[in-house]
Structure formats: structure tokens, C-alpha cells
Amino acid sequence: MKAPTSEEAPGNVRLIGGEMLLWSDLAAMGGVTEWRGAALELIRRTIPEDGRVLLVGPHPRTLVDDVVARAPSAAVLLRSYPDACALGARHPELEVFCGRLELLDAEEPYDLVLAMDGLLRTHSAEAPAAAWNESLGALADLVAPGGRLVLGVRNDLGVDRFIEARPADRECADDQWAPHGFDPSYPSGPEALDLGLEAAGLSLQRCYAAYPDRRAPRSLLSREALAFELPEALTFPLSARDGDRMLVADPLRLTRLVFRHRLGEELAPLWLVVATRTPRPDGRPRPVELPLGLIEEGPALYELTAAGTRCLPGGQERPIPAGRVVEEILVEACAREDVRTVRELLGRLAEWLESGGDVSAATDSLVYDGERFAAVNPPAGPAVPPGPRVVLCRILWRFAVRLLAAGHHHPWPWPLEADQLTLTLCGMAGRPCDAGDLDRARKLDAELGQPAELAEHAPTYRDLLAARDRLADQLTAALARVSRLETKLSYRERELVRAKAKLRRTQRKATAYRRTLGYRLSRRLARPRKVARRVIRLLSG
View 1: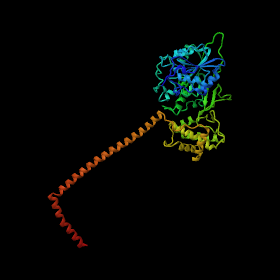
View 2: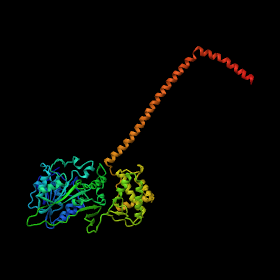
View 3: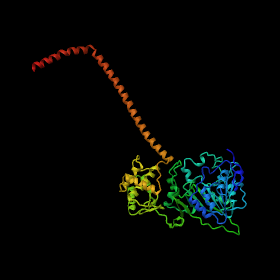
View 4: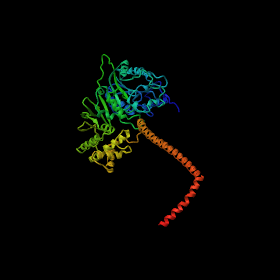
């Protein structure tokens, strides 16, 4: 393959040294964080109206296009020459630097620096990788007095590290010529991150914990929000399973424990910090209203406020409903084999639906405080609302699918499929359903656009281990029974051999006894007496 030359580059691409001519970070977006609506909203609030913006490292195309469209002046630093050329051709007005971070000599600093992919991809294979604190210092030098830095930092002990069976930094990919995890300056936690920013001359303005994973975060929760006990209605949706990963454990259960023990910041998959540089004595930083949190729920984006949440843009503020998520109550009752609790809760759920409950509700989007049900950010319902029986059947079908897919224990026979379990649950709720209701429930679920997590997702390692242990127990019991039967059969065979040998000895003794003179004489002498007895019986007869 022919190496590209500087003459082939667009006019807005500038080579600064250390560029990688045959390498692309964006070819497959492998390992590059796919920032979505929550991060875009945060960036929109930090973009200055009349300042300069610099993006450092690879970012999703949507994010780059949005920043270029909103910022009065924007520039990008990439180490990959093909990526720089493609970006320069797509945005001719954009200034693109190609090379290593340490070699960027900006004419003047920038009012906003975005390095949301972190500092790992600011290095080049042309030189040894700099330490994390050295790269942070070089990045901080690009921030103007009073300017801001938005930096993404991946947590080496994030909750997703305990979930994934194949961590991304252990896949032996081509970009891992500098193995991660051996840099002592890399932040080991929120406190170390704060100290690193302070050493670089930056002041932390707000630190966000990104969930549910580092690949495609859907929510940003600030340190101030995580300091309080967050309601289940807020934290439950932050750990949805991603079907194309190989998992070690159920992410829902593990993430719920993280929030329950108030370790949401320490075990976040990654941190997103907003830091500022001290302004000059004659200047002051531009005020920016940073949210307490941003949460994506499907196509909707919600901002976390002190009193609840509000839908963006321009939505009304609404309190976060209190109570436990219905799905967790049912899973706990199934684990305890508490069929009575399941029956009572499902009966109350059916009554709530019949009295006008939310048609689009599900067990993973409803909370129950012991008296009433409440929907968590309910989506739009169908144009023609179906009957309560079909709605209940759809809710219980989704729960059955999720219960079996996650491998949770339940008190019903294990060979039951999701459809059979759904009909069983409908009967327990006092609203028996048939196959026709189940088909209409599936169509309703497809119409709402919230498909349940079907069983084609790969089971987790722990599910596989549990299945293996269960099969191993069954095999051990079968082998023990076979061993007992073989022992009993061997004993019976030995007894049969001994009986046959004893019978042969008895037969030989009997044969030898018949050959004796006494036996033959007794037989001869016994015959006349028998004849005499017969004659006497005939004469007397």
C-alpha cells in the first residue's frame, strides 16, 4: 500500500510531527467512546459564544459536526493522517492538526478544549508514550486563562470491568503497542484525578460519572448528585445489558449494588471532568450553568435537578417517583419462592391497569411504594389503547423474558418457556390469558418500540457456570446411582456364582449317594412293599 504524502492532504490539514501515516483510529471506532445526547448537551452549554475550541483525539462524527456547527472557531488534533484528511475534507473551514499532543505549538490558547476520549490516543507509535500527568500538563497548556477543559478518563476499576469477560485492553489489538495499566501517574480514583488536575494548574468545576458503560454512556451523574441516596427509579435504568458483549455477571444486579452502597463515583466506568484555568487578574470566566446530571431514556433526554427531572428541551420539572422498581420486587420474591407476594403484587398491578394505569408501563419502568404504582419517564402510548388484559399480558411477558434471560431463580418448573411462564403469571394475577392475548401483547410491545431482551443474547459467564454446576450435580447423582447399581449387580452376580457352585456340589453329592450299595438295596427293598400296599388298597376298596 502506498503511503500518503503531505501533498495529498487538504489545505486545512497541518502536519506537526509524530503523525501516523497508515493508521486510523476511526476505521472501526474500536474502543472510541460513542458519546451521545447527554454529552452533546453538556458540550453545547460549555461552547463559548466568541471563543476558540480545540478537540483533542478521536471523537464520534456527530459530536465533531455539532461542535463545528456551533463554535465560532474550531480546530482538531488527531494522530492519524487518514482521519485528519477525511475530517479536513468534510469540514474545509476546520483547522486540523495531525501529530502528537506534545508537539502541538498553538499560536494562542483555546477557550474550550475537549478531550473526551482521554489521553491515550494523543500518543504516537513514532515515540515512547508520555506519562498521563505529562500529557495532562501539555493539554492544560492549551487552555486559555479562564477557559475550560472537558476531559474523559476511563476508570480501571469501573463496574463494567467486573462485568465484561473480555476487557477491551486485553484483546491484543494493533493499537496496543503501549500496554495500559502500568503508568503510576494514571488516576486511581476521583481523589487522584482531582490532584492531577490541580497539579496541572486547573480547578475542578464538576466531575461526572458516566453510566452504564465506557463505550456508549447514556447518563452523566455529578459528584453532588451521587453524594445522596438516589431513588431506584433513577438508578435502575442505568445498567441495561448490551447484547454484543460477553458478560461475566448480570450488569443490572451488579450496578444496583454499586449505587446501593454509594460507590457510584468510585466504580463509574469513566469520569467526565469539567475544569477551568484561573483567569487573568483583569478577566473573569464566562459563567456556565452545568447540570447536576443528564440521563437518556430512549430518544428522550432528561436533566436531573434538585427537585426531580425535566425533559429537554423546555420540559416541565417533575419529581422522581418514590418506591422500589416492580421488577426488582418480583425478582426478589421469586428468589425467595414467595409465591404469595408475587400473586398479591400482580393482582394489584392488574387492578391499577383496569383503573386507568399507564398502557406503556413495564415492570422495569414502574415503581411501587406499597400503596400505588408510578411510571418512570413513561413513553408515548399507542394511538389506540388496548384492553387492560392485553396490557397486563405484555407487562408479564416482558418480565418473563427478562427473568429467564438473566437466569434468576424462580419457583416454577425450569423447563417453562417465556410464553408458558407468562400464562402462569397471568393466572396468578387473576386474569387468565390465552395464546391470542399473548400474540396481541407481542404486537403491542413491538408497536411501543421497546423490545424485551430476548434469549438470543449470549448468557453470562456466571449463568454458564451455574448451568454447568447444575448439570455437574445431575451427572454426579446419575453416576452415583449407576455406581450403586453396578455394586448391587456385582454382588448379585457373586451370589449367583456361589449358588450355582453350591448346586453343583449338591448335585455331585446326590449322584455319588445314588451310586452307593445301601441306596440301591433300599430302592430294591422298597418296591415289594409298595406293590403290597397297592394290592391291599384294591382289596379293601
